[in-house]
Amino acid sequence: MAFVDQAKFYVKAGDGGKGIVSFRREKFVPRGGPDGGDGGRGGSVIIETSSRLQSLIDFRFRSHFKAERGVHGKGKDMHGRKGKDCIMKVPVGSIIKDSETGQIIADLNEDGEQVIVAQGGKGGLGNPHFSSGTNRTPRIATSGTEGEEKWLVIELKLFADIGLVGLPNAGKSTLLSQLSAANPKVAPYPFTTLEPQLGVLHLKYRESCIIADIPGLIEGAHEGVGLGFTFLRHIERTRIILHVLDLSSEDVLADYQVVANELAAYNEELLERTTLVILNKADIAEEQDIESIQKSLKEKGLESAVISGLTGDGIEDLKERIENFLDTYKDSTI
Ligand SMILES: Nc1nc2c(ncn2[C@@H]2O[C@H](COP(=O)(O)OP(=O)(O)OP(=O)(O)O)[C@@H](O)[C@H]2O)c(=O)[nH]1
Ligand SMILES: [Mg+2]
Image (cartoon, rainbow, N blue to C red):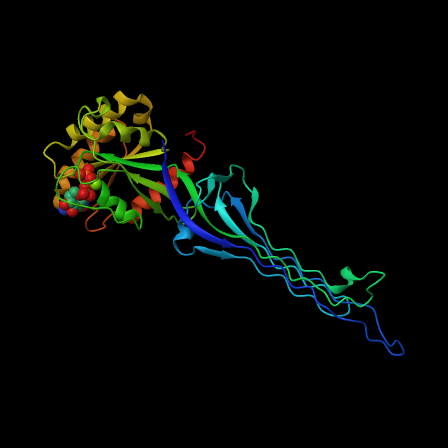
């Protein structure tokens, strides 16, 4: 199960250039033949996949894509230049649909795959095309045809690289808003987040990755208690799971166990994928308690990071650690 991101955009291919009417003018030749050049083809709008893109974020800033028109012909048989194509780069896995009919125009799964989504107009014909035995001085030329234009929809299934799990109210959404530009609702009560929220985490040395904030898990989630079940499916495809714990809770280790049990009951593998335990709300916890919790976690073989999603303490360190994890786990299958 993946999250589907969507964007609507407009494409307009270039119109063809006009062909023209012109006659040769030469010394000593009283009536030269026709020499009107043809118009150039209009550029097309072409979609090309690139494995370097991961999201549809660019479409938030741009929704109109136009190719250049063909240049008009000139005298002396000079044909107009072809209009430049407009090449739009999209992530691999994008699906392009006609916005009106919903019909799928392209399902792009290979890197570097190209598809023309709006065909450039044909160039017009210059008057030499209309020359004949009976008409040696044709005064006809055609204008080019118009480039195609339409509204399209692009869809992309997003597979989050990182999933945030934890009990309700642990501070997952707060952390997401620290790690990305996402702005999920944060509130001091459980089950604030009702649907997974996505954010793009920009990293220093590697491509950005997608981080998903999953609604809080509670005991019995794997059997459908609370909001759990549907969202555990989302976590299944993430490469890295960050388990967020609330340091102000009475028994932080017991909290850990509740969520860990749910993950394991749903799919044993999810537990192995838990890369890091995040000890959140450090601003309202005692240093000593934090240390002893970290020690206990370590005894279970669990690495932890101490942060405060509220003040931002520890966030930069955490980003670095995530970056390292992504390198380590880059080949893991999802
Ligand atoms: N003091 C303190 N409060 C925090 C911190 N992080 C989050 N909170 C508060 O904890 C409460 C819950 O935070 P959320 O981010 O909504 O928690 P959540 O895990 O997304 O909760 P659900 O969506 O209900 O599962 C909010 O009142 C936050 O302001 C922190 O580092 N320190
Ligand atoms: Mg939340």
